[in-house]
Each structure stands twice: as C-alpha cells, then as structure tokens.
Image 1 (cartoon, rainbow, N blue to C red):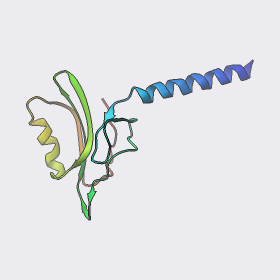
Image 2: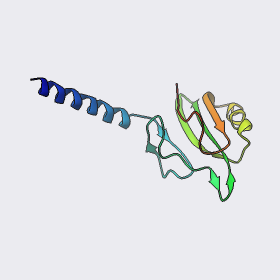
Image 3: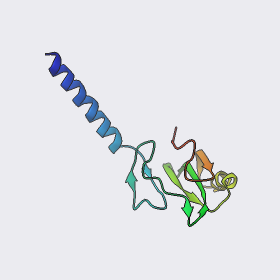
Image 4: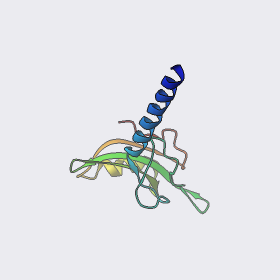
Length: 112
C-alpha cells in the first residue's frame, strides 16, 4: 500500500512538473528559432558574443495592449541604456528589466 501511494505521489509530481513546463512563458533570443517555451531559467538563452565583442544581455518583461511579453536577448546598446530604451516606448509598461555586460546575467529569471 505504501508503495502504491509513493508511485501515485511521484506520478502526480511528474504530471504537475510537465504541465508547469508546458504552460510557462515564451522566450525570444538571437539564437532561439521561433517561439520556444522555456522554464524560469532559460537553458536556450542566446549567446551575447559577436566575434570577440561581448554585447549586453538583458531580460525585460513588459505589457502592451493588455498582453505580457517576456524577452531575453542581446543588444548593441550600453547595459545602462537598455532599460531606459524600453521604458521610453510609450505603448509599453515595463514590469521588469535587467541588463548586464555579457550573456551571463546574475539575475536570469523573470520574477513577476
């Protein structure tokens, strides 16, 4: 009986994990083809190195016309200018923005 309960518990946890992964946000990036679903920490994040030049990496979450967009990508802008750029787009309401010098941001999560 205990084994059956253990198996049922593990099955429920696995099903919950699968449903969570399938219903998570979409990520966009330089090297991500199309719109791939990803977990909170995106293992498919793009590499922000163009040749030998390290670009700024950023994550931004913004609302536009009632829809939330979660974007992780690279930019030629200085890391201090990226969030200002998104905040100055009149149709966007920025909920979160993080930027760093390379593709290894300290905060690589969307926390809403």
